[in-house]
Image (cartoon, rainbow, N blue to C red; front, side, top):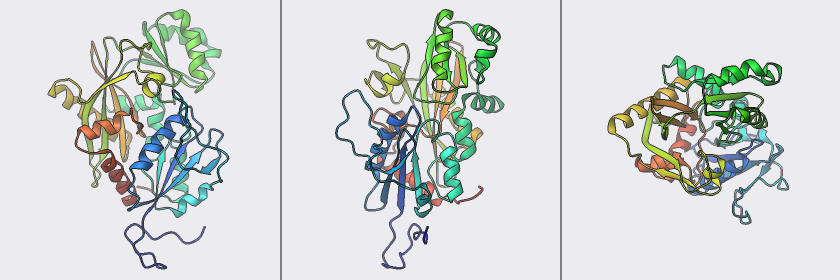
Amino acid sequence: MGAPPAGPGRVDPVSETPHRPIIAAVFGGTSSEHGVSCLTAREVIAAIDPERYTVLPVGITREGRWVRETAVWDDVPAGELPSVRGHLPAFAWEELRDVDAVFPLLHGPWGEDGTVQGLLEMVGARYVGSGVLASAVGMDKPFMKTVFSAAGLPQLPHVTVHPGAWQRDRDRYAARIMALGLPVFVKPARAGSSSGVTMVDDWARLDAAVADAERFDPKVVVEAAARGKRELECAVMQAPDGTSIASVVGEIAVDAAAAHDFYDFESKYLDGSGVTTVPADISVTLSERIRTYAVQAFDALGCEGLARVDFFLTDEGLVVNEINTMPGFTPFSMFPRLWEASGVSYAELVEQLLQLALGRPTGLR
């Protein structure tokens, strides 16, 4: 693939000028979160300092074709999300070994779940974010819950429906789920952005909810509802020395006038009905407890770079809901907002993540 580029801060032997690190921003992908990934890419690429870095936008179409994208869309109708354009020139993923670092701006399966991270490890590329194992465990909710349980983090009761199990042994699984009590949330085990999530408040709707979740993932998780819940979120980022640092805590709710039962895909990305409060109106004691749990969750999975940890404050107390190892950077996203409220601007946040990636070793860590 030719000689590797001069590393960050080094001098290009041909031009004898300082080398600007080449950053490949990879986005799109084949998951249901393709459009969200494109929104994230548009914002992050615009925030990268063009005088310090050379940005190479790389898109993955919904069908899995890698292309040289621009991340600029001028014709997206209101209420819709952009997508990677398959007619653009092809990009060979092997070329990623010739860049200084990769920013994998991918959400969901085949991107945030360790698959692309494994590819980057294979080609010896530095990249932003968690490695293969932490990415995979963070995406798979049942395994994530197992790790959190071992770390002593409080969670809601749940039932995992393994691939094909609902069809083979529906009554046994249904009995276990009904023991959770109404309402329950039925979710794909390995998806994000609330794709395929259904709140079931009538057992007659359970089969349809499982079927809907299985459209996104053959593995399904059913969780007890958090009674009287408030949704709270905390961002975590690594300092240059590897220390995990938590942001302020934020709160998310759905506008009471909106037609949503919970903070679903539409309220997150399409109609803007999500209402965010940063910092959250909570006590200092509760805020510190959430920030402590967020760091514990981050470290329990062995995360690197960045993550967002989501919580429910219920009638029974505080529980950890989930972790996102590549949270969104869209205009509605909490991760950059939480850091902005903590004194780190959007551009500074992107810069710090790039510097972490450029400074990390390749190979086993």
